[in-house]
Length: 191
Image 1 (spheres, rainbow, N blue to C red):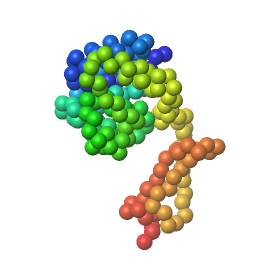
Image 2 (image 1 turned 180 degrees about the horizontal axis):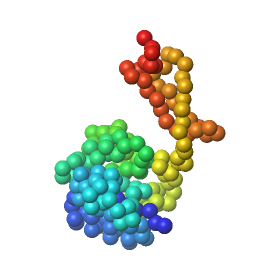
Image 3 (image 1 turned 45 degrees about the horizontal axis):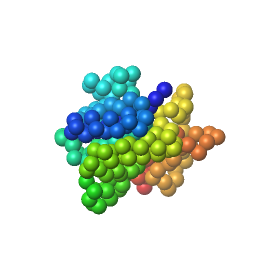
């Protein structure tokens, strides 16, 4: 099964040129397009017209433009990183080469930042880089949703202690199973 790529781009010419470049370098993965930031969020949330995951599967890679209608690219990135249970690979693909944009993208959790070339002919080099690294060489982190869910009821009794957050791991692994934070950062019954 080929994993889907989500391209978030409002310029139809850029969408066409990028898809053409990807096909020219041999990428046959399905490419879904969101033409604005809100559409990208709706797609990733699986709401509205994107609710059918067979037609709109979660992507292995999100290629995100900075300048988008409705919700800007950095706000989409911030939203993605704020979601639990996702580990999307998000690469900014933007015409902006401003250091402030690049720094902001990485600060918000971008996995990469590629600058769109001004010449369409150079777009194949970018497509080849995406193919080679993000689709072939890179091993993305496993999805939280693919972890084996805990079954049944879990009860937990905690003696009073000085903690504000308790991390819970699954037996036999170092993978997190949950977290318990008490009100006001104090254990129940604490002072």
